[in-house]
Image (cartoon, rainbow, N blue to C red; front, side, top):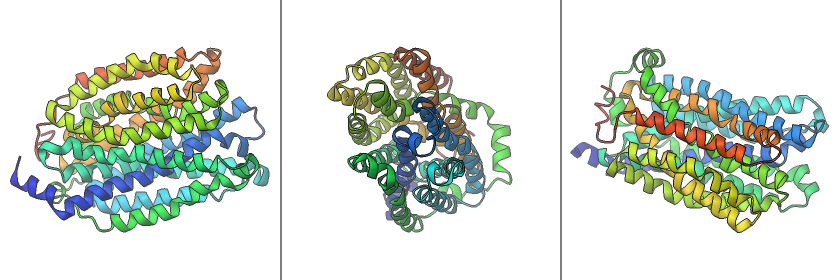
Length: 432
């Protein structure tokens, strides 16, 4: 480990950067999560009232998927300017866009008030959300990992990853609270509160984000003239690997956290709180698990941790649904805790550092954003929609979704098997 790396990582600037990356990630994913929760529980009744309950749910999940369609565009744009102009300005832009779009969703009139314009505006704002989060993830993990000492990049990179679970916890918690309102008040105005809170969170995040500095590995490198074009031309294999490894968590995460809410309420006939409580508990424990898996990947390598987690996820897909299908709130919570804290955390924690280590500094933001966000549009947005369709096709049989989860996990394991081990590389030497 170099002296510069150690000094940089222990400096107040590095600590502030790590906190900024994590808090910014929490805010972005809070905003993204509350949309998914609302799509699973209430949007079908507010914006798709002319459809049957099943068709309305599919339509609501379709708008959820729209955000993922915009994520690659956000990743491409943020990656290009993040590599040319710097990480900080790009991260300020993504947080501003996300906070603004989420707050406006909380002000939208419903279908009964303005007709077809309501779902059209909902899709538009969801696209803005997707664009923003598409650029956020790459910048947040870059800032954390590029400030980390060589021997702790997995642990540092895992902290912004906790933002996904922390945002899930906050977003699900907010909806859990407003769901205690009488149904009439919830549909009239209560659902808007979690979206409007985004204004406050965004202002806090922007205050912290303005105080961070650029990492040395970026400022000391020569900026690429056309980073997006160059990374596609010089690193096609690395980008394909980055897309492939996302098959484990990119879609399956939304089976465990979004689709499962609809499955529990509409197919098992349980109250909303049974699913919301289980998801919140799982998210809380996942926040602790992610840095531990990231630290383990620093010791034994990214590949062993990731592949073990992906294989476990494939094998666990059937026991997961067996536990959920008992209709016991306790066993549902146990199923969700295991799913997020063990296989999901094991595959999600190491990929931040792994992605950063695949590319050199002047192409890094573009390369990891393309790989990560292409995986998102292929998997995340359409997985709840596909899972719901499979349940309808199979007559409510959960084995169909278990096959979907296992297939994605095994594809990711094979993709990681073909990748180089990167945890010992210097960030200056990465991909050279």
